[in-house]
Amino acid sequence: GENVEQHPSTLSVQEGDSAVIKCTYSDSASNYFPWYKQELGKRPQLIIDIRSNVGEKKDQRIAVTLNKTAKHFSLHITETQPEDSAVYFCAASPTGGGADGLTFGKGTHLIIQP
Amino acid sequence: DAGITQSPRHKVTETGTPVTLRCHQTENHRYMYWYRQDPGHGLRLIHYSYGVKDTDKGEVSDGYSVSRSKTEDFLLTLESATSSQTSVYFCASLKGARDGELFFGEGSRLTVL
Image (cartoon, rainbow over all chains, first blue to last red; front, top):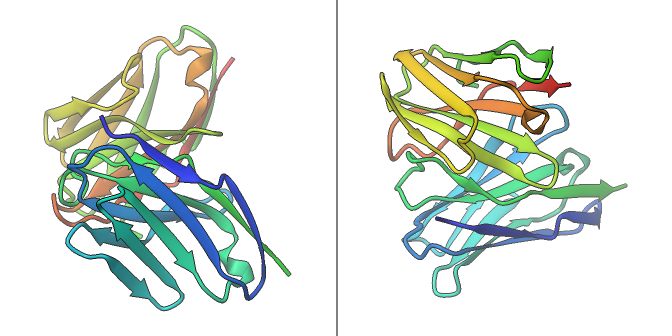
């Protein structure tokens, strides 16, 4: 089955700086790669996703890049703000929208230092 | 958020007792999932359903069973709870196969003593 590795497990950045979280996956059939944000004590929520026919996708301060050859994808957050502090999970799925369930990475705790 | 709720939100039980967690969604989503979340492990899929009475196993299904008799309800049962099943359990739903966005419930914290 799919295996998703996520790094780093903890990331501390100064407010206003950029943050990058990286994930690798093992199943070359995977074609859907979402990112979820989970604030303390809350439920995970989708922040951005990318499909294998696209190399990069942006939404305001967040962007995701995908390298299918190397089987890795990354989340980029620019101009970080205190509300970006949370745990971020990457995930992968070999079915178009994750219908058979997503395989998640272990999460990155992003800390924004004032 | 999609209308997806879990009950109970918190439960403490003893080893060997049966436990059932309920997930209810009002969005008429076809797909539903149960995940467990543990420190250092992220979210791991226990079971999922792709329609009424249609379910399948995820990566950590041992010791768990599920049932889906109605579109809106997905039950997770621990037949005989063990301490290793102490966790936070999240239910999620997906509208359609290519829709992508999982909508999660609020989570149920289960402690097995």
